[in-house]
Length: 154
Image (cartoon, rainbow, N blue to C red; front, top):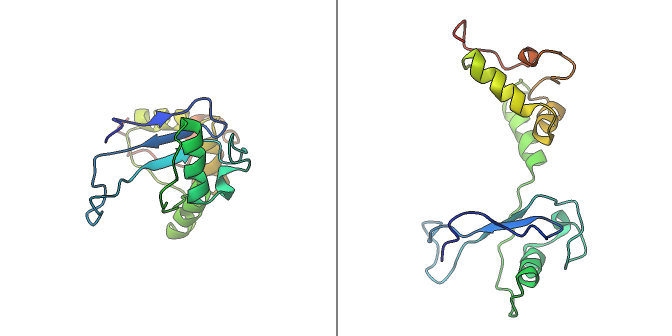
C-alpha cells in the first residue's frame, strides 16, 4: 500500500496529514508491519476526537484520532510514537553551530529570493527567534539579512 504522496484531512482541527511510502521503509522492518508517517500543522489546537492538543497526545491517541477521523472501526495497532518539534530541532541546530548565524554562499539573486521567502511568515520568525538569521524587518532591505552572497557573482 502506497499513498503516492501526502494525504491531508482539511476538515481536521489539527490539519492532520499522513503518507505511506514504499515498504519496507526501514531495512530491518518486519514484513508484516507498515510504516505510516502521520503529522499535523496545528499541534497546539485541541483535536476533533481527542480533545487535547496533538503535542500532548501519545502516539496511540494520535492514531485513534486518525482512525476516528477516517471512520475506521477497529482497534488501533501498536504505535511507535516519535515526535519531532521544530523548535527543539532549531535549538539543537543553534548549539551545533556554536550560536553562529547561518551563512549561505549563493549568488545574490538566489539569496534575495530566499530572503523574500522568509519574510513575514512563521518559518522566518522561528529562524530569527532562535538566532539563526537576523530580523529582516529591523534591517530594512532584505539584502541586509545575515546570509552572505557568494562574492561579486550575482
